Length: 247
Image 1 (cartoon, rainbow, N blue to C red):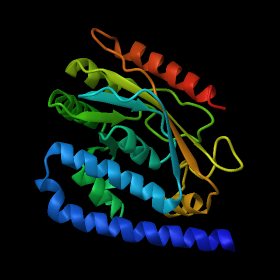
Image 2 (cartoon, rainbow, N blue to C red; image 1 turned 180 degrees about the vertical axis):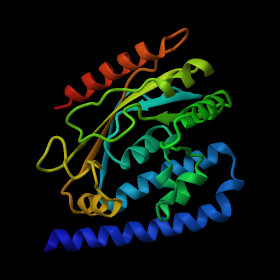
Image 3 (tube, rainbow, N blue to C red; image 1 turned 135 degrees about the horizontal axis):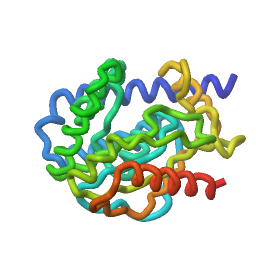
C-alpha cells in the first residue's frame, strides 16, 4: 500500500510539473536562443526524473563540444531524458510520440524529427533533415535499434541514420544506457516493450524502488570516409561491451 501511495504522489507531481512546462514552452520557448533552449530541456529532463524518484548516474567522459550525433541503445522513453540531461539533443522519434498528451507538445517544440514508419521512403526525408541539422551546428541523437529492448540484450543496429554523421562530417558520441533498481541489475520496470502503454510504463516506473539510470559516455569517434554499416557494427559492439561490463 505504501508503494502505491508513493507512486500516486510521484505521478501527481510529474503531471503538475509537465503541465507547467508545457504552458511555459507554449509562450516562451520559441523566442529563446538555441543555447537557452538546450539548457531548459536539460533542466526539465532532470526535473522529470526527480518527480518520478529516478536517480541518474553518469560515467565516462564529458560529451564532445559542438555538433555531434549521439548514438545510444534503446530501452525506454526515458532514454530521451537521460541523453538530454547529459547532452541535450534533437531526436528522431516515431510519429506517434507527437500525439502523446503534454509530452508530445514538448518534444515537438524541442525540434524532434518524426519518422513515419508506414511510409517506406520517409527515412530518406528524415535523413536529409538530420544531416542538415548537424551541419547547422546542432547535436542530434538516434537509437539505431529502431525499437526498444528489455535491456538484457542489444538488438541489431540499423545503419541508415548514421549516414547523417558521415555526410555532415561530425563525430559520433556513443552512450550506453542501463536501468537498475533495488532488486535488479537490469530493471524490468523501465522496459517499454511490446504492447506496453505509456500509462502502464509510468505506473511501473513510479512504483519502482530506487530506480536508477546509468549513462556511460564513451569517447567520440570521427567518421571521415566511414562506411555506415561498418560504423553501425563498431558502435553496436562498443555499446554492448560497455553494458556487459557494468554488471
